[in-house]
Amino acid sequence: MSTDAPLYERDPAAYQAYLAEGNRTQPRKRVGADVIFRDDEGRILLVNPRYKPDWDLPGGMAEANEPPIDAARREVLEELGLDWRGGRLLAVDWVPPHGPWDDSLMFIFDGGVLSGGDIARITLADGELDNHEFCELGAARDRLRPYVLLRVHGALTALREGGTAYLHGGGVDRRTGQEQA
Image (cartoon, rainbow, N blue to C red; front, side, top):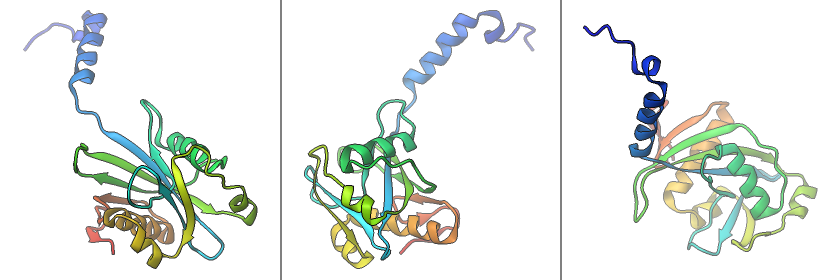
């Protein structure tokens, strides 16, 4: 057994270099943050991005070193012109690699029920979105990619039950092992 002091004690600069090398070589995950807003009829707000074929929830990808809640706030302001303060975390969804994309983590936050005044203030501000609409789940089913619809179901279940869902590819709550439908 070595009696040498650990690297962090005997050579702090070498220890920092060791940590930096580990940080440089470890995989990175993309992180996104979406928000579920509802109207007073319980419909959810969907947005129609110009850059992809399907509708989505308001939100988007986090910038480097940006916390997910800050990414959600920024995206809501950029996309909808709403100064949303943040809400409860409803779900975390691990999205497996697909197409050209590596895996990612999606954080889904509760945007609450928007007042009529908030809805009237929605402005498609940054040119990314073509349209927005409050939809019942039946209409959402026709507009969302299947795994995003499963993610929405998981998040709404967590909202109803007061918990947080841990999902894989939208469909399985790893807390319970139950598939979300």
